[in-house]
Amino acid sequence: MRPATLSRLLLVCVLVSAGSARAQEPASGEPEAALPGPHLKWGVEVKAGYRDSEDFVFSFPFRPADGQPAQTLTMQTVDPEGNLEVPAATLFLDAEWGEALLGHLKVDMIDLYDRNPTSTDHKVDVDEAWIRFGRESEPGRLPERSGCYVKVGKLPKFERQDDRHLESYGLVSTAFNRFEDLGVEVGIDLGRYVYVKGSYTRGNPVFLRDPNALAGDNGTAARFDVPPHPALNSGVPIIYDAEVEEAGSGGNEESGAGLGLRFSNEDGSRRAELLAYGYQRTLADRVEMEGSLYGGDLDLLDAPFGTFPGLADRDKTEVGGNLWLYVDGLSFFGQYVDQEIAGLGRKGYEGEIAWRFELPLFASLAGQQLFPSIAPSFRYSKLDPDFVNPPPGRTPAPSFAWEWEKTDAGLRIGIVPGTDLTVEHSHNRFLTARGWKTVDELLTTLRWRM
Image (tube, rainbow, N blue to C red; front, side, top):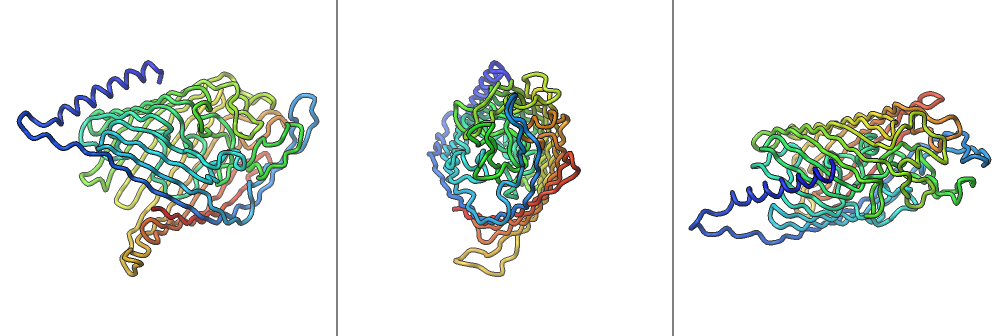
């Protein structure tokens, strides 16, 4: 979406909102309805967990640049074996003024699983900070009437799965839309069943990370010709869209658009939503990444490493489709993405099914039900690159071009309202030059929210 198109959408949104507001004005002679006052809500969430990551080692030759001596690099599990850790403490703040105005802030302290490179990135991170004018419906929820919204700030991708049931992420979520971007988003309800969305943002830089819990340290040596001594290992990384953390960071601006269709019964217990979307931007020569010698965007795929065969232009494009489905306690989320990064293509598939069961009351604590719910979940994701690596010795991560499958299975147990325990197992399976390899990870997360 170009800036001119976005401006037109903003104008349409204002006109639709104004018309909707006039339609709700009290008739002449009737008492004026009381305007809602501002309402402030805040919350705190703390997570503590146990992570057990299988140790995996893959060694390969690497020549940093012309004239520099060759060396052997190793991709290894970021932090293997068992570890007790506190991955995050999060502050939430929402300021509401009726239905038409909402401000949202989400700040992570510690933020262990979202740092990149893990040990050197920000330990306090503003994940989301946005203000929204207008009404936005949840997936599958039918609005009462036509309307629109404008959202400005640091915000998640509009196609992202936000009703998550596991602490881990699938390959598609990690690669394409896990992290927030900075910009503006517009949504317009064309009646109750059809809607369009558009965005114009700073642009998430292309970088590398392990798809399991910890991202790993990549490019943290003092120089390219010195063997690295990082606090954490590199992991087995894939290409992904990294978070935009500050207004001046990120790649070139990105435009996106989506068309959606939704259905629901009267009470919303059974509903579905389909969304088709696309994004486009021009890659930057280099994007500086916190604490790493590796640059983002084109610099990751070109000099000082060997150029990937097929690297053709500077365009980054992707098209995709999502399905949300809710049937009472059962939910399903599916996503397909087809992406090209400077001529390098890859496809991703992901599907997650979860079923939440409300349990009967058999015990209570301080007036609250003990073990009110249980929710098993299963997710399958696949990443299929359509490109090959540079000649041997000319890439810092041969795993970029590997075909990859990941399954995640878990169980979330409600302990009391606001407190739950999630136990999950991730199984990675990827095709290396030496055949299929596997890596497993166990996550146990106790979450408390007030």
